[in-house]
Image (cartoon, rainbow, N blue to C red; front, side, top):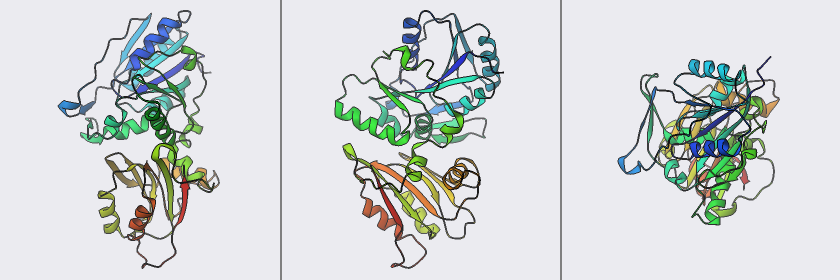
Length: 356
């Protein structure tokens, strides 16, 4: 039987205000004995430009239990120890950690209450469009763009704390909330400044469900619900649509197009069928970062399993992509993609579904 002490996973990019949120919880929820675990894997290095270094890390006020861990093994030991002496455990991840992987690890033996992600409203677009790299020294110094991890943190969250809202217009905040809702439509969004937030918004929510969360990210929701007749252009200029085609792309033409992806496209996710490939490939784009990988396993296989009948992992051969962006020129994007198809011009057009 799992220990009854609930565990919160608190994530967010550097400078978003995670420590400020914890200080508010400790200050205002005085009747609870908290254990704070600051989990900072030491095998990752962030590489960013000098002029983007604007973040200040404040030390967390001391609680009854504050532990630092640097590996998953150490984390499990710390959680196991604190379940015996604390009423509630908060695992604060460093700014570049993937929260869902940690949540899955802990959920095997402990009760994960929720994944809380803190978003820096003032600097979100700077972070999302930056070319900063995250280097993993345990994977032969493999590097990914920070925007990939930032997107992952948002897509796999139960509550989004929109911090540093002070000084921002209502229109700008609603625009950001609309985009975040496209990345994770099922997350609760709470606005705040300086981390000032009521503990009841975050504690004992019981929102985490590993099985549901795997299939609840925004791009999957967009495709699974594509049959609903909705308008293309959403509020604040943010819109999306689904491109679906059972005709393969010419590889050279498609890769040339993807390298010149229009800047107004903020997020693209789904599967792509290229001529000569036995399986569709996974396309994932966030801001300036674009990744194309094999899609036989993992989240794309899971997506098709959910989409079809929940009992098969067979991946059909087709292209199915969701595009999310600001002031998208849908027809221009469609024409460009159609021009990359193997079949001659005049073949049946793809099924298009507009989304708000």
